[in-house]
Length: 401
Ligand SMILES: [Zn+2]
Image (tube, rainbow, N blue to C red):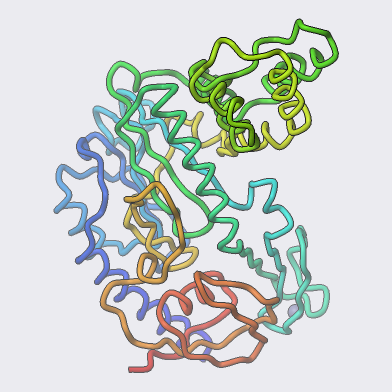
C-alpha cells in the first residue's frame, strides 16, 4: 500500500516536471558544449554526471526522455572534453566565478531558521539542531525538516545586491546572472572573460576573503578606526564613497546611519574641506556602529562554492527537488518579494490533496501562513503542496481536478 502511494506520487511529479522542461526556457551558458551537465533523477537518489550536450535541444531531449531531473546542474568549469568520466582528463579551460548566499547563514536569521527532527512512523518531533538518526520512541529512521521564513530571503537579497555592487564596482565585471535557488537563497554566476576565467583556487580564496571580510580584514578595520578614536587629530582618513574598495563599502554602510547633510555630502561627494568637529562626529558614528557596519559590509557567501573551480551550478529556471519550486532567474535586482507565480509551474491550476505527517510550528510559505498538524488532509495549489511534499513532511494523496 505504502509503496504504491509513493510510486503514484513520483509518477505525478515526474509528469509535471517533464511538462515544465518541455515548456520552460532554461538559462544556459553560451558555451554549453564546453560544460559538464549533471543531474539527480526525480525517481532516484543518485547522480548522473559527466553528461555533455552540443545543443540546448539535445539537453532538453535528454531531460524529458532519459532522466527527468529532480536537480539539474552545469559545471562552472569549461572543459575541452566535458563528457570525460575522469576529471583530470576533461582538460580544464577556465571557470565562471560563482556565489551562493543562503538565508540560514545570515546572522540576523539564525534564530528564524526552523529545524525539526521527526519520525514519520510515530509522530515524534524534536526542534533545533540534532544529530540523532533513530527515533527515540520507536527506533525508526528519523527525517529532518528545515524552513526559512521569507523575511530572511529578503535580507539575503540585500546581501546579493551588495555582492553585485562589488562585482560591478570593484571588479568591473558586468556579465552575470542572479537567480533564486528555489529553496532558501540566491546564486550569482559571473561569466568571467578570458583570461580572468583561469584564475586559480588561491586567487579565488582571496576574492572570498575580500567579499566576505575575513576576520583578518575585520580586525584591521577595527584597529584603524576604533583604536585611533582617542588619539587627537591623528585619526586615519575616514572612508568616502569615491575611495573604492573596502573603504567605499564602509562609506556606503555609514551613509545610511548619517543624518547630517554636510556629512552626507562628505561621504558622497568626497569633500576635502570639512571642519574637524564634523569629522569627529562621523568617526563617533562609525565607531559606535562598527560591528553592525562590518556585518552589513561582509557578504555571507558560501566560501566552498566560490573557491571550487569544478562546482556544479543549479541551472536557472530548472526545478529544485528540495521544494518542487522553480529556481528562477531574477530580472529585477532592485527589490525581491517571493511570489507564488514565480516559483510555481506555469499552467498548473489543479489543487493537490496532501496528508501532513508531522506537527509543525506556524510557518510562512511564500505568502501564506500555515499552522498544520500531523494527520491533517488539505488541498493546496501546486507550490504550497510541493513545498511540504518535497520537504518530506507531507505525502501527496491525489490531484483534485
Ligand atoms: Zn518514531
